[in-house]
Image (cartoon, rainbow over all chains, first blue to last red; front, side, top):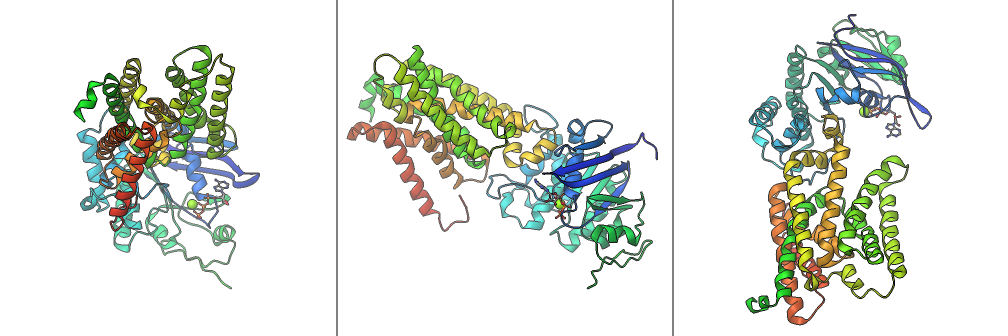
Length: 251
Length: 270
Ligand SMILES: Nc1ncnc2c1ncn2[C@@H]1O[C@H](COP(=O)(O)OP(=O)(O)OP(=O)(O)O)[C@@H](O)[C@H]1O
Ligand SMILES: [Mg+2]
């Protein structure tokens, strides 16, 4: 693969939490226009992997390159939808202002420009939340909040999208719209999405990786049943090539 | 009430009340929405060390409290990041250390501290003119910084992790915010004293939260409430010859109680 258009590069990354390895020798390379899905069991280290890319977790060993530089310097070019946004639902802020915070790193001092507002409105329209723009954030349902956080990431005009279970709690209609939106977006950027919805992942993404401390990844959409079994540590039924892979517990 | 104003000290007290209201109205909103009331209390009590030091070395105690409260604000912001202890533990330690230092300094100072009580519980009636200009200056600093950093402060108080990722220097700005809290504390010492500062930092903002979901409107409303509480308290303390600081705090508390009873059937949660 061409190293020049590499957007995210991890080489032999190790992360330990209190002596226990969370990521073991993870290497990964994401390129422009890639749409990578990451699946794996709870506690497999998926969120930790994204935080390593964002510079929020420092790896104990290994190298991380994001958009040709250090994660901490380049992360403002990343759009991030966290798994759990740590915010106070009583916070006096409107939906529009939440989405505008996606623009808050673009300039220091001063106000949002009309361009910022247009982008925020556009992002809200993409997730069909524009009618709610003046609502206080806590007075939305869980799925509506998640859509607002997706809009917040899009408003930043990111060059890469890191999505940590973005569709969790979002209804079927918006999910489909959202995945179709991602298909369009990947023409302009690279996307990494964590999901437990293996069916959706296998339909929409181009490449799949399995993560359970170690990353099983062949730079393609194909996973061997050995990969998935090693990841989930349970018997797996695998139907390859375009047809949804399914993971079934057998006991 | 007009005839009271023929006394110079009353005019000063009124001015001090209004100047204090501006600071605690704006900064109190951040303290309440970011839920760092305990940090406000810690900074306030720690600043007593500065007052004691002022006595000891013969500098105006309120001026001496400025560097002291800023230092304790920065310490609270940094300690829990550098050393492996919980933030509230750090606050508790700095809170008590500041108080202990203050009392130590005062006991070392020659003679006896006649108006010590007024720094602990406030005495707005004795605010000298020189303090008013310090208060005005602190207000100007607070307003200018909040105007410049409004969107950044909103981003870091709402979701610090996301703000960090998006390129806002969240931790540095958080320290700036803590310094503004420190300045507000100094402004409020004259009015209600270090021990009661926490009331004016929280009650006006908490009451105004019931009326709006917008941070800017909340600030304006809480300036209004803080000023009303201070002026009402001042008036009552003059009429009934009560200590001004505690009268202001009790007035605020009663209004808070009424406002929370009145809107308890509402959908607001504060
Ligand atoms: N702050 C932390 N301190 C200590 N251990 C942590 C911390 N965060 C995560 N871990 C550990 O790291 C491991 C990986 O966590 P991570 O959140 O990355 O999992 P995940 O794959 O995202 O799981 P899920 O599917 O539940 O979201 C877990 O075993 C967890 O116990
Ligand atoms: Mg996770």
